[in-house]
Amino acid sequence: MSVFGETAKLALLGSGYYARRMSRLTFPGVAVLCYHGVAPGAGERMAFGPLHVTAAAFEGHCRVIRKLCNPVSFADWQTAMDGGPPLPPRAVLVTFDDGYRSILTLAKPILERYGIPAVAFICSDPAEQRVLLWYDAVERLRGEDAVEQMKYAPFPEWRRLVQGTLTTADDADPQAVLRPDEIRALARVPDFAIGAHTASHVILARATPEEQRTEIVRNKAALEAWTDRPVTLLAYPNGRPGTDYTPESVDIVRAAGFTAAFSMRTGFATASQPRFELPRFLMLRAITAPDLAHRLAYSWYR
Image (cartoon, rainbow, N blue to C red; front, side, top):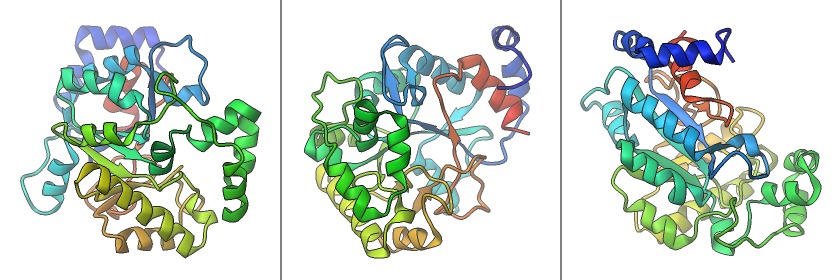
């Protein structure tokens, strides 16, 4: 949180100050925003609730992005990286990790209302099995501490523990994941790209090269079969370099036929950065629309 209070930021946004300042700015790269799920409201108890922005907050973010920035698709960005027309001066790319169904039911109508492209990075195993993502299931059963204990277990142990906690989820569950037919539908939305996120949201650094390759290739193959589209983007689960994925992971992703991948390093994504470790800004429920405007105009820009 910046030194400025929420009231001051709200006043600056309402007065048009942020818009005037940002009209004179050129971002050093693309501001890639990393969302997860979208919640109907703030009152519903959800596993890892801070990762699920409310629909009202997300709409506020989209309003800021449309008014103050230049939302772009990854196709636009890739064209620019490959020598095509340059991106506009305040390019923003919206991304979602994991593959929650709320991307379709809550986020998509808002994105369409504001004309904002997006990318959804999806885990295929939960979608195919119609279960919760493993960490949401474990949090509900045993709490967040149990998730942290499991997360960095060696891959065979992690796999065994996960199999023991699989939890069926119907479409009404606020943390249900997208069905394969819904993933296919999203892939047909103009300027909405589908990306890979490993088959089961494994911490790649805890797996052998062959186990990593299987998770990555199986995820890519499933998504391409469902969407009838090439899947060329990937986001590393958790995404911290050296902790959650390794240089070996990057090599496997590149060899699997992807054209770019995203980490969770913080910062603007510039042309000089490795295309398979692009940074993003994590978006949390506590970030309001005025706070996002301030971050784009000052905190992140600096």
